[in-house]
Length: 315
Ligand SMILES: [Zn+2]
Ligand SMILES: [Zn+2]
Image (cartoon, rainbow, N blue to C red; front, side):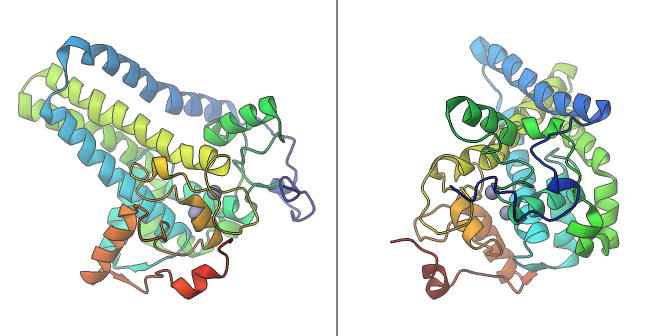
């Protein structure tokens, strides 16, 4: 626990001055509030509507399909490939994953990756953009910290200079384009289910219901699952590996997070393409990467090696 919020290892720079959280600008505040509240509003309305009306197969299928497409965009693309370079993709796969992840509506590719690299560099210490230990230990500080790590940090100014954190991505013109057009992919992520619903049912209400389930509800669930890895998986769960932070494995989230909630193993070995390193641990993102490799779309995949993994495993 001494490591937590230890200031000594933080270099100079904006993120070196820390415990003083600075509120983001008005635009950031408003977009963060919209990002959190609008999908949740959809969930509440969907819950009310579900009662007595049920949900159609079209809406359910679209919601699940888009959950997987955008979720793998985050887990396989934004996280394992762009942040940690756990494999080298063919160009078409790289662009597809960049777009899929952008359609999860979690901000631009460049911002996402820069923040996540900073998270690993300072995990649970000063400089980490979203540590649940930010306010220290004890019931109230940890409760506040949990909110901060989950979604509160969106309201705080968190400059992660691109030149410092993502020089490799800045060099790629495909990625510059996808990242710059993040708003377009977010809109498309909502427009697509609406148009499919409209085309299939030929009614406006059909389009609106598809937007509700495969738009708002799908986005809300994916948001809270990925944010849950930042918050819960740094506070609760098992810690079979030795790391310098409080990352933990949360089995409960492994299906919905595509394996990203084996977060303790991930912090122990960030570059690995498989986070659920034990045989029984569900990690569907790793299965997908395996298929990409077999199809020749992914090269230099960093798979775990039992002998190396053992080095950090606690008794
Ligand atoms: Zn983490
Ligand atoms: Zn990571």
